[in-house]
Length: 411
Image (cartoon, rainbow, N blue to C red; front, side, top):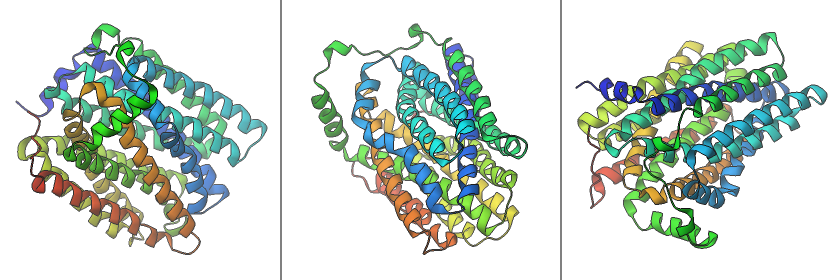
């Protein structure tokens, strides 16, 4: 059976298909919002520090609200949580568009980034837990990779569209168009019914807020395999998010690119991630998760080092494609971690990992942003070289040094 056959079978399931379509529409919007906010801030303040401030606003909610989010995901209907985050983003985008017309400036974008970050902090663990309810563990890798493809294709579509729109219209107009995409993503979720979800929790059986929070942390710390796997997941994610604040000033200051060219490089990252979302799960199924993850993170580390030295748009475009392919390691390591996590702990464990990721991302933004006035943007890329190299080492320890080997998922 070919690797694409399980994906085709999954897409034949209406609930899964609507979830994927919803993810696709939402991430077209997310890509448009990200480029619109980033490029507007960079145009007003052409520095890493300014963009780092915007991204701090986006990631701070993941750290501040982590315990509450984890409990909510484990106690509530994950489908309702996903739908609520989409509605909230529609409202926030309409409000931001109106405020930007009345009082244009970075402050509105900072507030929008905080709201969008709060929604993302709740949306990601709820979506991952809901996907695990929709499919059994034997099909989880394929389901996660399809969700990742939907995310990346959304950015592929959203980034260039936003770049083009920014050249012919205003940021508020782009935000309003984006609000419509999130509204469409919400409507798609109406076709996913409760009866499609195989696993549900009884909220009355849970303990107190603090007890449940402590239980989630203790559960994660009780298994060194979980710690290693979620560490790889976190490092890969931190790598991706750190590059998001480095590329815009690098493209503008070092390469001298337009917003459209900047969007094209961002899109090449997403195209690479789509290719990787097909190739890496296939490699993991055939040769094992360990070899696939170690190879991907190693290649990514070398690619970042070469990228930092380039002065050509086309070289930058190609290298970001390679990096994107390697970043598709995220659904592979996420699947391995999920398979070792009890379903009743999924929300708290994933949210705890997301909180640590957010703390590391904020730390990296602080370091990179603080060093922006003293260190060249080229040298700032040393940070992602180090992080991706750390991911490679931890992945090697998880699969080749760990005394209790991590079993690969069935094909």
